[in-house]
Length: 111
Image (cartoon, rainbow, N blue to C red):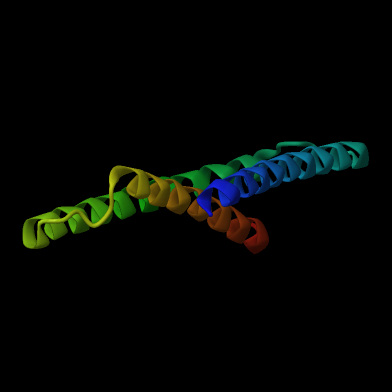
């Protein structure tokens, strides 16, 4: 079953990445045609704030994940997550935090 399922998942992942890239390029070209600048002071400020939030939330998440894993090893003798799962979780938390905070401050407007 996994021999059949993995190629389909790989094609789905590739198609998703490709479509996100096409959408990003289309959006940049559309905004350029309408005369909007690609980066202005507000966008740079919001991106910097979102990156800072994502960085600190990611650090706290990784520290909590490490502490949970250490306690699980000490108390139960078995790690909660292996290295790959912990890395994937950390990357997802960092990325999603950045996207959500960037979206929030973009919608919120000037502070």
